[in-house]
Length: 114
Image (cartoon, rainbow, N blue to C red; front, top):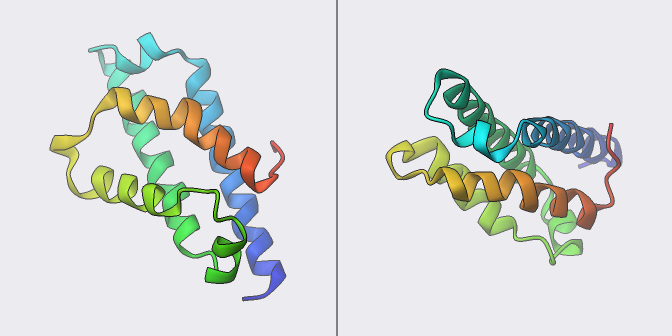
């Protein structure tokens, strides 16, 4: 995979992380609210997590190996859970991923906010 393609994927990750950061600004109470707005925020959060994992899956093995401090397997497991087992999704766990794990991923990869 060319450096150009890797950079495009990293740009995508950065953009999706910005989306997660915006969602987090809405607050945990709004995200967890048993309202239509809360449902929309949770759906958006799930979609952001799926998009991040999908991009991460497309990064070459050499890149993943250079960033062994990232829990790539955990990212993939989260995507599988959200995409295929919505009855088992824990909204508090997803909030923690959006508010903590995604910013840490961006930091570990040295990505800049867009």
